[in-house]
Length: 383
Image (cartoon, rainbow, N blue to C red):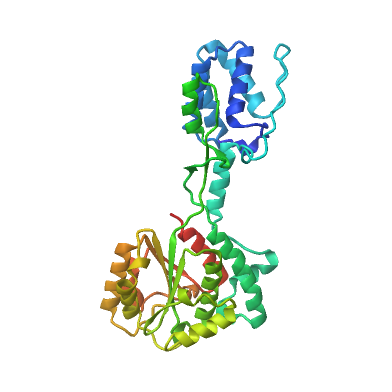
């Protein structure tokens, strides 16, 4: 049997707590014995229920509000009418007073928690954000190495949309917040116990913007030349939106780019980076570079740090040193993400010695050859 969801029914205006109190009042008018203790029990029960499931919500209320067999029929009748949004006809009940408008400055309108949870789950399913309209979809799938100068300009506009979403990504956690956009049912009902079941105040909560420390290590060796310039553009665009990002590049040595970011234009900055980085587009020593990061930048490696390595894994150095450096980074950082542009090729397999040495310490291994692959980074940066 298919489970019905709240979204299948018209919603009744108002907040969940207010509607629960109003529903109990209608039950009393119909002769169902409902007192403050039953209302509080009902509130506790729906905290444990899936608010997106109407059948489960119905069972939670009926098991706490109905004490007599004779009350089952009126309860079910009123439940269908009230929670499906139909008008309740009661000749004895006084008309429902108009809702008091919220004075300005008291916070956003209250929301139905089931809708918030469904919206949150929908956002989490769609964290692989698709920026731009349908006409931009082909461009999102184009490999960076095939972009024309005109397409590069258009791609940068899409990048700004993507990095704004990444920089302002909200946590999946809920935290107490005055003026938050959601009602915290558990804390609201707990507070009501001190006032005989009366809801004097409504506790609120919100999803805070994540402030994880992001450390990007970008390979600028010759084998990455088709991708590294665009990937650096992506990182520079991200840095404009948040200061919780550190950028380093490597080939045969490691260079910290963040101090160079005083330059405003991307093209000029890329020129300065090319001058500051010795051997740009030359060979690569990944193990030596990661070991230099591990030993030379301890302040960037903290328990909240997420290390993102952008490299094809083609290494001329010692694989044992690469494995040792990766193990040390993994021990200190929250997460390691390795993005490899070659993974965009369906026939690619990470068989080179460098990737084989690094992969045991990687939490996520993904592609980085087009905008669509970078969009998945939003999901992988989640806690």
